[in-house]
Length: 255
Image (cartoon, rainbow, N blue to C red; front, side, top):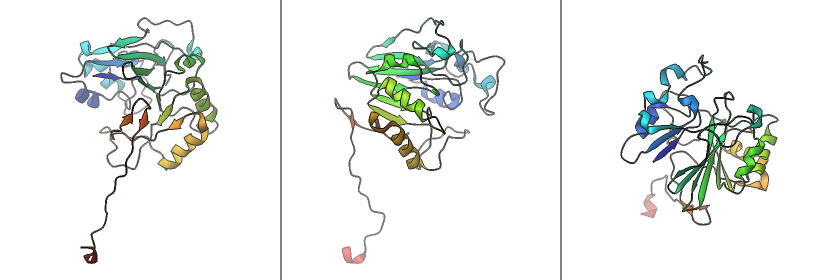
């Protein structure tokens, strides 16, 4: 129904993928940050294959009447709190409520990148995707008590950066954290055609390093892209079952 893009980098705003998703009678709107429409000029190709000049504005690939720019409601003081953006209020889409936060990767004060808190008001469940947020900021405390599932990108991961992740979790206090921005060992884990994926040398060690940082502040859910998960409501508990299968032929004496 609705698609939300945090910023214009190719691993978040991928035209080939969006052309496939933004079609059909069910699709209603693509919400983007300003950079997906008017990237900073002159264009600095930080990523050699990002091809901003070729891929942007995104309306080259998705009809303009299906694209809407959203601005952050909650701002980082490092970019300046005197800024004000038209269209930064809470967005209501029927049962869906959307609040936009400032994210921050390679942005300028007047060209913010976005994260999105999406709440299904009828089912009382919410998901916060922070985009490529690198540093927490005080205004995020406004989300405290509102976030069930925090989709975590890479904030606080790296030498000497753990305190940033602790601060983020303390500010927002999500019930669950879903780590992303890494691959898994599943062959089904999708990779956009023609692009390199971020990866880690050991997925389980990566997950455990995050668990060690956040401690008992929240619960980790190591989800995998492309896999459907069932959540029990209203407890918001992920349901799992035993999945028995044999990898060997039945020996003659068992027939």
